Amino acid sequence: MMGTMTKYENVSTREGFNSVVRHVKATISYVETVASKTNLADCFAQDDASGDLSADRIAAVLRMTLVDKFGYQCVSRNLSSVSENLDQVAEEISRWNSVDIVIAYHHPDLGLLIANPKDPEQLAAFGGLRKRELAVAYVGRFDKGGDEFCGKVASIALSLLEGAKVNLPKDLYTGTCVYKKAKKKAAAAAPATKKPAAAKKGRPQKSAGKVEVAVAQKVQPAAAPAAPAAAPSAPAAGPRPGGRMTPMYSVVVQNELFHNGNVEAWKRIIESYKAKYPMLEVYIYYDGERILNINSLFKWGKVKHGSTIQFAVAGTDIKDVAKLQRYLIQGASHMFEAFLHGPVSTVLKLF
Image (cartoon, rainbow, N blue to C red):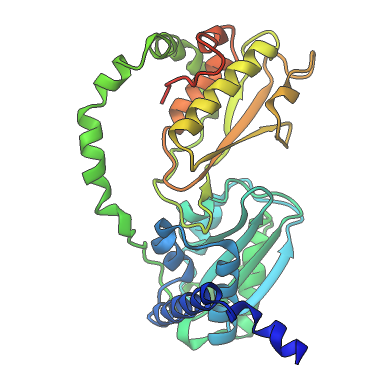
């Protein structure tokens, strides 16, 4: 009796019952969509704007839809190494017309991320792979399910993510699972929201205050040295349950040392960015490690002239990354004082 009560405990309340009903309806919808030959990761990309796709729901839908319902072959692996060029991986997998494939990657900071690896934007949104993190490949042929060949393809896909050279069977390139770019639901509405902003773009920048003007004037000289390190422009919307992460952007320290003034400048810049975009998160990395407290970068002799600090932005509808990079570049130079004007308790209006 006790076991039965525990089994159905989550539907013993109205809230729990309604949550389960919504999940079941959503799962049935995904099953029908996959049966119509649409990649499941593309389905998630369509629904990501709703904000209702939590990681635990995604994991449950993946298992139920691809494995239990359609019999996809599933291979998991903790990556022993990582590919440095995911664009090439996506270019190769996009030609695999014989199979449908979904990749799940457990990002150390963002959690579970999902991608159709035939779409370079979705794969690039992983923000760079990490060694020893879990990746799972689901391979099948929509309503036709999967077979032993699909299992081999899943293993090959993970090997490509590891940057390994593998022999690719010719059968991969013939079939009906041809990649078609997914149409994003938000694409039609986007221009309507951007046009008014474009018409007023010039005026707000002038009225943002003295700090905004001073920073904008000084940013341009500082941005030039880091141009080669700049990552490609981020896609407008991400196909992830919890959003997506941009590629890593590099900031070269131009000051003699990255001292306390630089640290405070960075803290105020990031504070300003998050005040403008509260749903986005800025991740800082140094020497391959995530920096949870920017103050830890203030160590004499550790971060000095020529050192590279990296950052990435995570979330949905990511904006102003290039502008953020320009400000961080200036904040890491001798011109950091432009960000320190005004009371400490105030938030700069930089974005």
